[in-house]
Length: 272
Length: 324
Image 1 (spheres, chains in turn yellow, orange):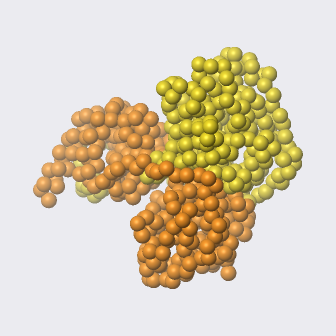
Image 2: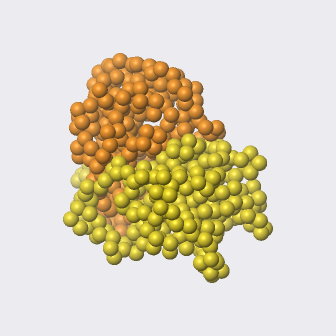
């Protein structure tokens, strides 16, 4: 089994945004991995490893699209435990969503992968469409917004608990497939691979890289590809023509007592 | 002539109300592009729901149906096929609907098959090809322009009015299409049973956060919620801690809500939570920490322990209701 995980770096979401005329200035930003992509890697590693055994059930390949200096971001995922990396050397700001999706689909095919795991959205652009697009391009089933995952190794299928508006939908998808992961996929018992004891509880959240992992990451191979190697031409289906700060909410007031609050809500705001 | 096509969601022979803001957004795009508005109902037997939609009309030229057993229960695979088929057959060049978990799943897939861009979570239609959408947890608004004859969109449900009935329009059945789930099987949806209104539809929402400490403490929030006929919500901290089910989460990665009245109780107000509720008309924050960021967006802030403030508020509202 080969699992591909696509990752993206984003400006630190905890930093405040710097607005320039019609755009955002990220030149002084600290770049960090998109949190959902860390969850995706954690999911892949939980599927691939057998806790309490040395066996590996899958190879985990981490894919980044971006300039060569993104290697550092891949190193972190390799240090967490991914087996090798692939970088598609391109300026992500000049790629539209359709092109990014085509590049990922092309790598998936080139590597003959069985499963793509991706974050459900990037915290910066919040498009929320790449995994679904890749599934469409590959003509394979998809399970979006996964909160739980169970791998049926014999049946070559995944049973996925998907967070939908009405609750949790349970969907079984045969491999090859695309899964996008939501927050709760990194809870202690969210991922079961059929080999690690089902009672095993992981530590919550994406794992930290161990010292050994960091040392080993430097020796793990990272291939660099050009979009042209994958036969994908850059498109410009959409472009950003402006960015502005949202209108600020007008300053509110502090009330001192519950009575005063009740009074304001009934007489001033007239909402109850 | 190319069309604007809205994908609708129905249940029990009726339109699901959360589809209505998507129609309004599409109607604005139709006006801006001069293209007629058309509606599409998918399902195993979409006729009855389509008739109900057509009776209201919603400003559309026609309601189309596409019937196939594989379209129920919903899968992105079969719906993707159906949407692609309908878009081609009807010569639709703008395809979209409300950004529900259903259409956020199916529309990008269909867009990829048609090699068309998709603008997600539109909050404003600037022109026929340029749309405003929030990014970075709502901290910025981006203008996105599409450079393509065909494009898709999803509309943020809280930012557009519900479409109004305008008068009956015809129903037209599309010829059968090959649709496939690609071997995917839906085993069911574990619904959170509740007699309360849906979070995205509620006029009043009472949300609790980390400071509630445990699920049992939500009882008092439920009392307040039910007195006001509202829906119960929660911050990520509360859902992650298992105090309440995950589908009650309000925020960047949960539900985006904009009720008339939003109570944030024992919620500190992380950016990710604010992204999901700052469109609310009146925000009330109750928190014992006077420095909590939630107070920066609250219309009314009360620095108090929820253990004391919420029961008092419940009594005051009960007394008022009793007097009325």
